Length: 389
Image (cartoon, rainbow, N blue to C red):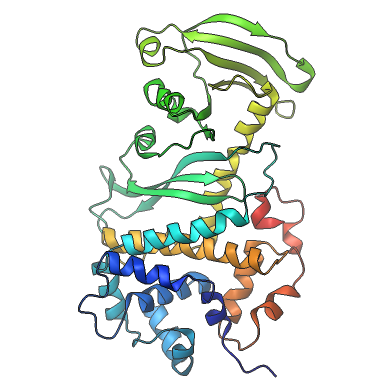
């Protein structure tokens, strides 16, 4: 019988601890800290994400029940509810945010060749936001409406593998289109946006950065057609036009030609009109790129269902942002484990198994590799490839 390290410790072996210490030092996270380090805090919150703990007291009770194993799990400090609460309140959330970016940098090359439904060698991103409702009485800093609180997660998702490259956490009042101002655009990349991001002044920045956007047009768009291109109507494409904007403001905000594609979905019969600044890809590929945007919606649905980002362990802005970034870190970490161990199971299956085996002293590959590839309930489910196939 194997009597080695716990599965939790083996999962945490995939963390680049040298980079974590660099992030801690950058924000002086362990300054004057005696017994409960930033690493202890991160490991406790990661444990809470992996095992779906409901509260700080829940975390404390479960970890203290396994006190003899905590040292070998990497947790050196004494786990106490008050200590963990103080750490979440006072230690800079940017420590975990920067470390999550390190993990994202490790994960993206592993999934660079993952298919997403469109044969395209270029980097393709989907940018969107999701709202997480909060109680305004407990979270007064997160005002959304008069009697409602909320935060928004503005996420740039790499569709090759569904890895979030950038996540901006703001209050619920910030309009989605303003989040475009903080995006660092990659030349040659494609950015798929929904109709809520249709701001021609901001979209012109994509053109200046040699990046491409694909979005939907509004019904009242004022334009003049310059020319039409031949299309195969059997594919659902109805027209492929080169246009210039004629609105009193839009013509000034975006003075260059645009490509307008009208498409009818053969499955639903819905009529869609796309706008893009790319004139080289086939019109059907543009339509397929926009269809792939739905993966960011599935990503939001998945993390809300399987990670702890709707109920929080603290009420301050620092505590909330820390918990969200730990959740993202855990998601990316499990994606790294899946790829490096060449596991065929979905992230959902891996998370479910980890949640009940973290304290087992068996090799992690032995615990995960012999599982069935999919759960019976996953059959026929139209979900993200990374999650369910």
